[in-house]
Length: 505
Image 1 (cartoon, helix red, strand yellow):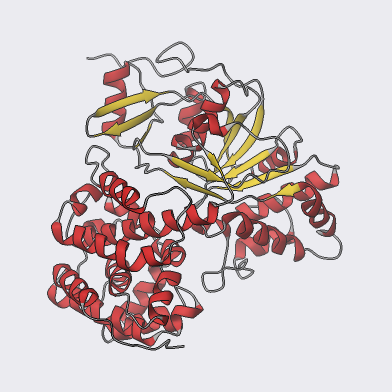
Image 2 (cartoon, one colour):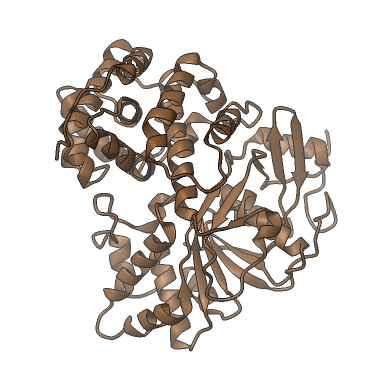
């Protein structure tokens, strides 16, 4: 019997390039793969540059798996940077503690109230902010938000932030920065608005002190994060064991490309993340538009088309000429016109990088992972570009195809099988959308119920019958003739001379 390699920890495996942090200055909510391959790596660079007081207290939302593995490994793990030419490995030893919020929400509040914490970062995904899908405002009908408002240990991210800031304020707390790293438009302002809304709902003067504290001592800068980080697989664990000679139960893989643009508006000190290449800028909104629409929006189309074609990986999907043509068409003709590019960014160079990243076959990024949570993600990506084209008299055929392919994956109409990769996608709206699909007469009926009645993509698109009708046509094309026919139809229509549609408001 072959002996297992020693577990990664203090006395085995590659050594970090920096000393262990002397203290924790950061509380991070959302201890998933992305944080550990992105913000943690930038923080490791800051520690290497001499900022040794910026250790991270990592908080997983609900899952114990990563927490248990990290605790058993002296809070260390491996980051494998994967490209078609090979892999490189690093160990960002930046975490000073890790625990699960669902098991100890009071500890989240207490840690946030600790004056030694000067920055809170978040990667809780778009649906972790308890916002209403139709309005974007705090969802007061959410039973968890309602429970958090009544009191007790808060279960939601917004409740934990608000209650932690409330306790910090009551103790005359030091200034602190709350830094969202999720794919939300103007994520700093959005986070602040949700926290303020929560505090404003508290009875009497309970939230008044905290609101005054927010005005004087709390900053909510925006940021844009970008790195493709797939789910961890047994193959990755085997690669680490083979190459490094250690057993790592919490490794993460990532592409070579990484970017972090941050609004330099902090209430107190911050890590020198620029040592890892972070950009501090007043153009975060432009970076965000570029990433959320060109990368994320096109990525969604590639994922849904690939899943419907029976393809497991993003690299396999973009390798198909039809999918690549659809991706180039949506990127150039439907997303780029809506983007204000940051200073110094060359559009064609950035576009070339995107296609290289999607084609990274060694990374193994799965269509099911990219397609997950589409009801939340697409709301951040498609409405404004689609509305700009509609108001100019043009139909956004490829954005309509994105929505049609999404609905075909998540809410297939009776008799249509979207395949295993679509069925593997997780979506908070799946149950409701499936109910609507099961009782819809055709694609147009389903599209109308989802977009116009349910307002899945917001109020403005709900008032665009031309777009809704086009989505319905493409749903029917997918289920009757296949996804390839829908791709051909969309590309052909997008190349036709523009016809006036009117604003449809």
